[in-house]
Amino acid sequence: MIVIVIGAGEVGYNISDILSKEGNDIIIIDKDEARLKNVSENLDVQTIVGSGSSPQVLKKAKLSQAEMVVAVTDSDETNIVACLLASAQSTSPFKIARIRNPDLNKDSALFDKAHLNIDLCINPEREAVNDVINLMEYSGASEVIDFSEGRVKLVSFYVDSECSSVGKNLQQIMETYRDGEDILIASITRGNEPIIPSGKTVIKEKDHLFVFAKSGDVRNMLKFFGKKAESPERVFIIGGGNTALMLAERLEKEWVGTIKIIEKRQDRCELLASRLDRTICLHGDGTDQDLLKEENIQDADYFIAVTDDEEANILSALLAKQLGAKKTISLVNKAGYTHLIPLLGIDGVMNPRRASIGKILHFIRKGKVISATPLGDEKAEAVEFIALETSDITNRPLKDIDFPKGTIIGAITRNGEVIIPGGDSIILPGDHVILVALRSSIPQIEKILTVKLDYFG
Image (cartoon, rainbow, N blue to C red; front, side, top):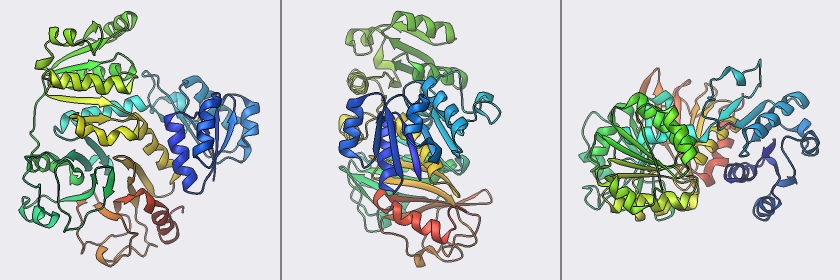
């Protein structure tokens, strides 16, 4: 498949990396020659210097032959124009645009077939806000991912020294877990390496666990692993950009506590104050220790750093934690920082880039795939798909199916019922199946799904 990626930033680079390794022909367009030089040195893709909103540049990129256009520059206007040109000049079946304007959402009529005709609009900041709301709802989790329309959750968290499961293997843990609630530990990141566990795998302190559970069982599962449920009353938000605005709007709508935003730019503070009803907007630096003390940071239940500077987010979260904030969440896009989070003591991460990549992968892996989400430091991936009658993985116990090494079936939903499977569980046609696999196993899994599941049918 020929895919044109417009924008060689974090999202563009990473989606191109994934797709090129899966055998797709990728053409990346960007105005920044230095960025493209970095891309050329590290990825097996074609690069073109120029604007993605230029008809001549898109023609040079073989737009007429492309099956997908992914416009993920920092400019909404460029992304929209690129998709318009794709509609006018080619029969491209999918047009994906990153739209960061907080006043526009994926359901806007502006993007439907009768208007801009964009198949998928991604707002990374809005996805990041959803992540924060989930983390606040499920205290103790470092990430919460929804599957099967929210019926199943894949919850990640770090194992603390006081956790009673430390030193026990998975079989021992499951023997002591409460009856009537099924969970499945699908993946463990230890250090910087993912582990697809077996019953003999022993849990260690600082392990990063990824656990499947029914939505209604998540809080009890976290409690079992030593995570305390909390009802936050005070939230600090550092940074006054679009992410902060959308987060404050959600909190005002769904939550009754106190919200404070600290933002360096005076004009932005004034804009936020005009848009928000209950949020206190403070003009200042979120890394200013005196300011944080003056605003009683020690009473904060959550400190959420969402500036455009990832290093500043990490630094301010660490400072807030030192000054007494109970929970800290930091916006971090770079996958390389992920394994540092537990070492630094930050409680949760919001990753807009990863959310964007997951949604794009859903479109790339078309047909019967519902979603595809990178996990942890992105060496593993969670995929939800629909099992078809033609598949030879249906009507057979899971223990008898030869899945690629590094693959585990995490959950099955059938007629609205969630099944956390064991070796004797059977997949039926029409089931929604969620699996976790090492990234290195994805090509094998896609081959199985393509050939045996009529994956692209």
